[in-house]
Length: 125
Image 1: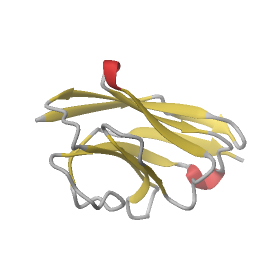
Image 2: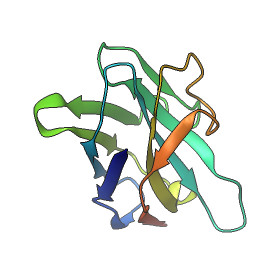
Image 3: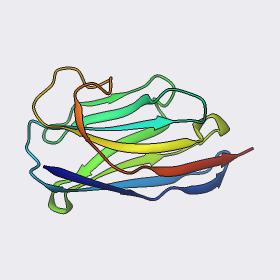
Image 4: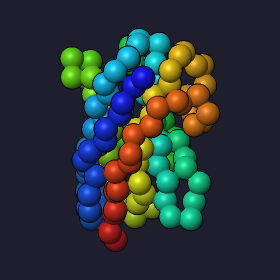
């Protein structure tokens, strides 16, 4: 089992920045992928960013590429999502997720078995 706890959400003006954190506890393995997803009111959950727990490969949705950065601190079992140049359309509940085994696919929610409770990000115009 893996437990995920997100933090760092809040209210920010357009153009501002926030950093989300996701602390993982339990059985985390190097084969896991860690991802961030978001869900805005009335919309489906969508992929934001992902990376392998080990290695350097990162993956981003086109809508956040160049503005968001996913990183991790292995010593702290924490994955971060640095969000810069925020836009009102980034407003959503952001979820951290982890796969239980290796998956070549990381841009959809299907391979992710573990999910955090979500943290609200609101960007005002």
